[in-house]
Every structure is written in C-alpha cells, then in structure tokens.
Length: 226
Image (cartoon, rainbow, N blue to C red; front, side, top):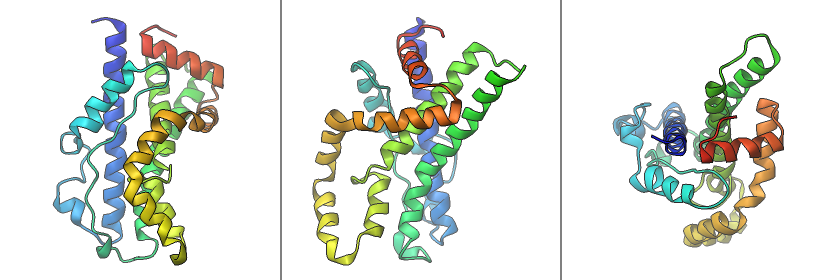
C-alpha cells in the first residue's frame, strides 16, 4: 500500500472517531439535561458503527480528498434527541449543540499538549506519532470551527437561534428554509475565511506556526514524511 493511500486511511479513521466523539457528546449532554432519546437509540457509545453515515462519513471525505487544497472533513448520523424533554427549554438546545464542537476542541487541546510536551522536553515522541497527533489536532479543530458556523444544520445555527430575539424569527425561518443551499455555497466559496481561525487555534494548541501547519497538510495529503 502506498503512503498516500495509507495517509488517506488514517485521515478517515481519525475523522470517523472525531465525529463519533462529537455526536456522543451531544447525546450525553441531552441525557444530562433530561432527554434519554439518544440512550434508548443506542447512540451513547464510542462504537463507530451506529454513528457512521455512508455519505457524510465515507463518500464526502473521499470526494473532498480528491479536490485541491484543504483537508477532508465529514459528519456522522446526528444523535437523535427531543428538545421538549430538556429541563431547560431556553438554553438546553444551545447547550446540546455547543458541546459537540467543545468536545472536538478538548480532544485537540489534549493532543496539542502531547505535541508541546514532546517538542519542549527530553521526551521525544516518534515522528509517526507526531504526524498522527498533529492530524488529530487539525481535524478536530476543523470540525469544531466548521460546526460553529451559524448555518443549519450545523451546531452554530442552534446556538444562534437560542440567542435571536423573537422579533428576528424571520432570520431563523430563512436559514432553516435555505440552510443546505447556503451551506454548500459556504463550503465551496467561503470556507477559506475559516483558515485564519484554524491556524491560530492550531498554533495555540501545538505551538506550531502557520508555515509548519501548511507543510504538514501537504505532507500528509501526499504521503510524505515530516
């Protein structure tokens, strides 16, 4: 198996586990707030099988891997929950939505600490693990930042809808009606505006600057070794 194919397999494996953590976090927060829907559906598990969405977890990442620039991302099956079961009807939906991106940022933070620890102490982590840890940080940051974009069905829209006053409900209606179209337009034409945020978070978590981030992405996409 060539190195580019192996790199792609690693990306998909890390992506799948990252989106599983994201979705399970939604379910656990809903359960903590009084809604057992995800538990009864068997979705409070890190086993990726119940969470895999054929398009979002496999086909979309594969297609994106064929496009120039960037890095693959995707999604899992949304964890089901009933907002009417939440004890906090006002802020509950925003908490359930927000915990998904926060879980990805937490994963990125933990592996970022490992990278920093390995780079600044006598404990040297192997080069292969450094690449994998860096990819885990990067993919989880991309997932977190992307999901906070306030366009349905992304988590950021649920947070936005909670904050919108009642007299601006027409904005919610517009976004829900045209959300998927707006999301596709954003992905293909405006995703680059997230790059500075992703680069800054990557630097804060790992200590690696934008140049090293760009070199790392190119190396991992084409199967080279850092």
